[in-house]
Image (cartoon, rainbow, N blue to C red):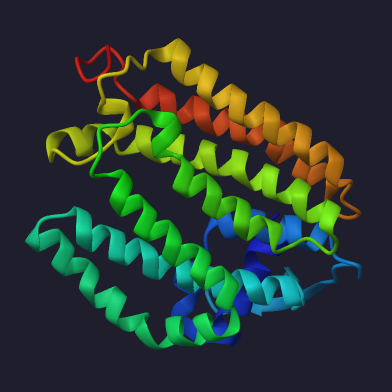
Length: 264
């Protein structure tokens, strides 16, 4: 996992400059691992020195087409995050996001040119989310733009029609899970600033229902993952899909004050 994380960090620097290293994320690391696992050629781990720890060489996943796509998605998703934060926050907080958004303007144009389909998926996602947030709807409807976007981005890894269908379903369920985790993490802040959050709707979301939503998404994601038959990194991916994501949800839920009046 560390080798893929470091490889993605190095690839971001080579593709978009040294500052892009700060954008490396666990989400895109997972995407890169899955992409590499389905590659027709065996992923290569090579030693490199890290500029933040140059004394000793560390293993890095070498450059391959999938890692370059992950770099482009990193830029596109961060640009969308900047736009989303500008829309959602007051003047001072939104002003803080204008600067990174400005820095990303040129790299984002390059990323759009390289990944036109992915860029359109992410743009449609942002536009759909704007419309969703104008309505008082429950979690299932609110999470659909994120889930559909992840389905589209994951299906880009497929090398044939069957694999694309499996990845589409897998990505959709992972997207539902990501949206649930984000909604939980933002719950108190959204309530404080009167921002949209489906967990603040008229529906009741107690601990049991939240676990049911997470388990439903992850169990269906696991079923889809089992059909992929990855050639590489299979043990690592199984650990993430069948254990790591469940543990992540547990840790998020423990920090959420479900005894507060925000959730009945």
